[in-house]
Length: 166
Image (cartoon, rainbow, N blue to C red; front, side):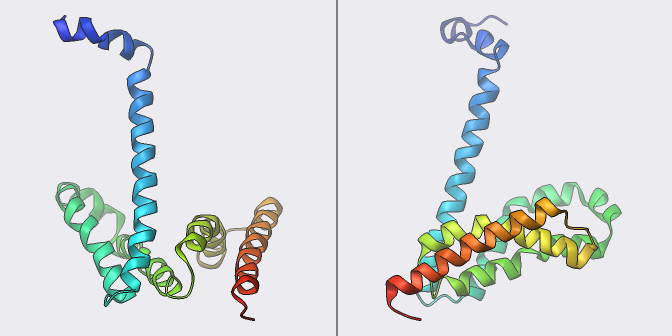
């Protein structure tokens, strides 16, 4: 179908060069950044109000459950094949993370969380893989984890020095 809009905007030509797919990718990347950035800021502001970290964790789980509920319902047979224990573990893994970050934001600024949370995720996942699943940590994984932890300690220790606490 060769509509005037397709000719004017050159949509077919853009599709042939993959520009549309690239633009979609950039849009999804920006959405991820906005979600992560707003989550930390909103959690930080929520902790300083009457909401507790437990309330915030509940809200963080409730919104995706409502949005993804219809999709989960359509895929219920496929989900059932995975097993109840595995599905529950995958569903509940975010609660400890959200609670730790929520309580931590009561003591640290959101700028520190913005640096520490994403950087410590690979360390936590590597440690959990070793602890829960018995995965071997290769030497590069171990060195990487040590570098990340030393950077996190530098941020934490430097913030104590700046604030005058010890």
